[in-house]
Structure formats: C-alpha cells, structure tokens
Amino acid sequence: MRLIPTSRVTDGALLGADVQIGNSQGIPLLRRGVRLTDRLRDRLIALGVHAVYVEDAISEGICPEPMLDEDTRIAATKAVATAFRAARQAFERNEPLGEDSLLTLQQVVGRILERLESCGPAASLALADMASADGYTFQHSIDVATVGLVVARRYWLTHGWCDHQGVRRYDRIDSRLGELGMGLLLHDVGKLGIPRAILHKEGKLDAAEWSLMRRHPRMGVDLLATDLLSPLVKGVVLRHHERWNGSGYPDGRAREAIHEMARIAGVADTFDAIISERVYAPARPAADGVTVIREGAGTLFDPAVVVAFCAVVPPYPPGSEVTLPDGRCAIVVSVEEGHFDTPLVRTFDGAEEVVALGAATGPEALSPGAGRVSTRPATVPA
Ligand SMILES: [Fe+2]
Image (tube, rainbow, N blue to C red; front, side, top):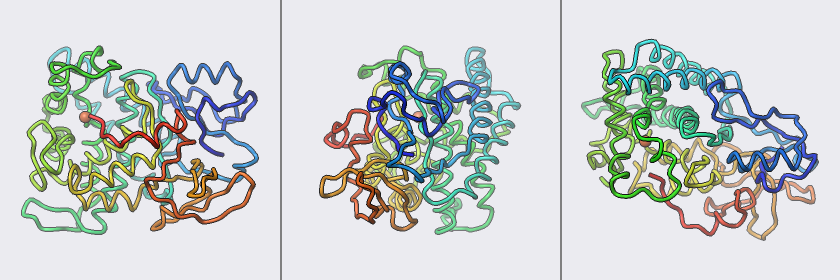
C-alpha cells in the first residue's frame, strides 16, 4: 500500500489502512478494504483527512508497520479520552485529576512500552486527523508518547540516563520510561483549561491569546497536584516547551537546566505537531518533521536527543511517495536501521533500487498540497 493525498483518490480505490479519527472510542472512521468513492473522498477532505493509504498494483507487497497496533491504539485512545474528560471536569471544579484516571493511564503506558519492544526499526505513526481540538489533543498525546518513548529508549540504552548528580546510569531504565510515558501522555492536559475559541482559532493568536496559551504547561501541572505522580512526570508537563537555547516557555530555561525527559518531550511534541493535521496547518510529511528536528539540533533541541531521534524515526517510512534526485516519483518499499536516508524504492515502472535521499528532499507528492510543502521554509509550531 502507499500513502497518497486524499485529493488524488480515484473512484473505486481500495483503502489500505484504517482511517483514524479523533473519537473517544478509538474506532476508525473507515476500515481498510473499503472501496472509496468520490463522495467518500470529499467527505474525508471535509473532515480534515488529507492523506490516506491505498492498496494498488504499484504498491503491492509494501506493508508499512504502525508503531502502535490497532488494539493498543484503541485501548490508549479510550483511556486518554476518559482521563481528559475527567480532567475537563476537574478544571471546572478546580480540583486535581482523580486517581482512577492516572492508574488507567499508567496501564496504557505499559501497553505502549510492550508494543514498542516488538516493533521494527521502520515503524511509523498512524495518520491521525483532527476531527476536533479535543480529538487532536488526545491522539497527539498518544503519538507524542509513542515517539518520545522510542527516542528515550534508544538514548538511554546508548548513553544511560542522567541522575540529579549528573551521573549517567543504566539501571531502572524501564521505570524511567514509565514515568516519561506518563508525562508525555499528560503533557498537554493543561490545554483543556484554554478556551476552545483559542484552540480552534485558524489564524494567528493575538498577544493576549498567545499569553494564555503559554500558560498551558503550568495549568497542566496544577491539575496534576497529586502525590501519585512523581516530580519527574510533572516536570515533563511543565517543561515540554522549554528549548535548548532558552527561547522556550514558561521560564526560558536552557540546556541542562531543562530536565532530560523534558528535552526528549520537546523533540517528540514538535515532530508530531508537524506531521499531524491541525486547525491552523495541514499535516506535513515525516521527512519535513525530521528536517525541522535535525535543523534545530543545538539551537532548539538537545543535540544528543536529536541523534537518538534520527536513529529511530525514519524520514521516509515504507509506503510514502518520494521524488528521486532525477525527478522521478517512487514509493518507499523498505528502510534499514542506520540507513534511513537510503531507502529501497520502487519507481512507477516497477523497478526497485536503493536511492540516497537527503532529508531535505521533500516528498511533495505525499503532501496534501502537492509541491507546497517542499517550497515552504521549515517552521516550528508553537
Ligand atoms: Fe504543549
């Protein structure tokens, strides 16, 4: 199967993978195997689903592997949606989030970690649309947790984690991952306290709106005022928008003054925001996301975290369309760990070859607005 812009779907095309939509049950909007019609295509576009996997002759035998299998994604979506509903009520009552929600989320983190241990090096995130701001927030939380945990596992297994005395350690990595996973799932919970009109706003935020938006990390921590969560979890929530060069918020902390877990969260959050559909920006290809992270190494992001990120997140996942250096279009068949920039591709005449692609070689054919993404300068979302 291959990923194409929804606008290019032709009548009768066979849907290759479920179309996920941000509902609280985690149930796909459309199941794979469905024959798409012009009407369904237009409906998907209206719902903000700008790319879909289709099964056809040219992509036969290409099987993208999602980082999260369907069962794990559904269980995670239900748990996060329930926790976020409880969080909204807690906000309204000015109370901390209850214990039940936190325990369920801990189980979800355990399931995601189990799944990540078994998935291959070229696994990619499922496409999540943006049916609603709430839908985006909880799907985004699951995807950020997934990417962040993959990156952290690679980073800590290679370099160890850094304790409060600055000593790198290799013990208790599993429990550290569990705490990081909780922080990642909850990192944007404070956005539930932001008015919907601001979250849904299509244009630029004005100064007052932006100042309110920048409060969401602290609002999230206030909501998590419980001893059930460690300071590490709360630190991820509070610091995920801090940046390596001190340009982030809420406090403009820099370098090692930002906890290592929050530095990982910042990378995962930024990457997922770029590749997801949002109210104010269409989804962009994974290659664009990887480029932004690479270019931010040493300025916005911890360079060591970026190295770990680039080792585990393929810019050209199997099933994605790419433009080869000679201008031909091709589909990525497979990628190998350590060689993500040289995927095996299949051209439209059926020939297969290994091709060197720089991360800046944007697969514009994959983009919802063909040709647009590759010409747009890389920007980092808020
Ligand atoms: Fe955030």
